[in-house]
Length: 154
Image (cartoon, rainbow, N blue to C red; front, side, top):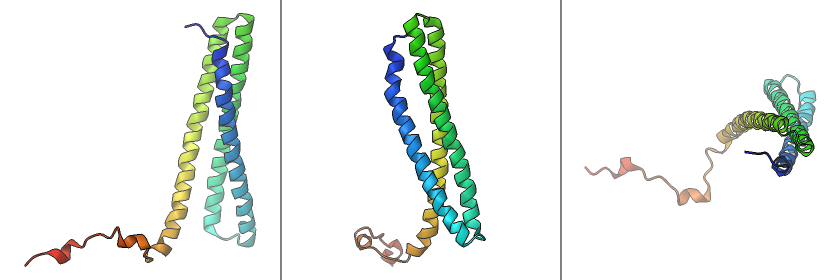
């Protein structure tokens, strides 16, 4: 298969959208860290805040690496297009493969970061579940479990 100039160009929009999503994740983490910092200054002895700081630091590192490998992928596509334009197709093929590899690494790191953020959110939700377990909603009337123990015929 011969690599065309349009092939790496197709990745430009995909990589750009990925970088935008990574930047949005970074900004969300930055907002969380700033809010957590304010809470930590008010009550520095809270153990849960220290755990959240470690979690956010790890996620921040992952997002930085996601962006780094995304930029490498983008640069690889640009270099690949330049090499194709100059007629160096063999080298361009290798550069394109490296570019795709760095994109895969970036997506893999993104998957790990999503797993960590999901675990953190589930912990937050489990803390709140205890408060709302005793409340009944209006939908409980429609989705009420039948008590089989009271229907036993003697």
